Length: 257
Image 1 (tube, rainbow, N blue to C red):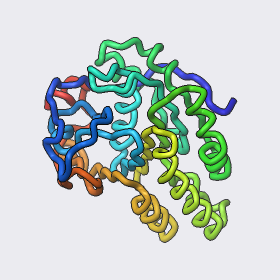
Image 2 (image 1 turned 30 degrees about the horizontal axis):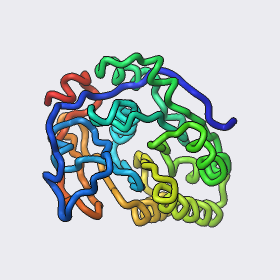
Image 3 (image 1 turned 90 degrees about the vertical axis):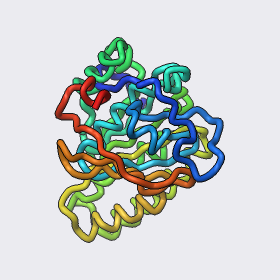
Image 4 (image 1 turned 90 degrees about the horizontal axis):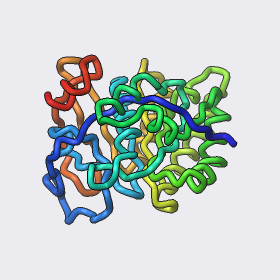
């Protein structure tokens, strides 16, 4: 089986605020939403809903936010989660067991139990990543019953010089098209992370293709203590930017800031 169970992660506690439709252009969906549990962020972006294809990009803190979602997804719905395991496809060897464990502990959850409900598979080449997603993702979701899929560092492997430029662009374009349709067809949330590095013509092409196909786009900008969360694209919510702390401080400070 391509996807196997893992253990420990890092997360953040719900603050008890109700951001429901605080920032909406239309009547919000009644589908359960998966938010970040951070009051200032949740007021701008109440959360992902089933059928969403979202992208977290920019600062490496975008990875931390994806780990936060992996833990929060496992909370019951009444606590802001989906009561569900997670499928995680790691395209950049970025998954941090200790970070996820710290998040789980802050939520009063058993880190080992949280990690056992994260089905993770690592890809080491662009070809492996493409196959894991386009050929293995549906089976992994059906077997695990996961409602959240995280694809970590989705562009990194396609920037490898061993992958011909034209082939990389063509395959990545097909991959983003597949991901734009997969969440709605399978009733799940897909969140891809794209920590940006030194720009190149290839990376800019992939970033544009990725952001164009995503329904929800969130950018993390700046660095501590001036870190910003920007909602850049959403079909329902008003776009905007809020400040929030970085992963360089404790989770309790993170959530209380």
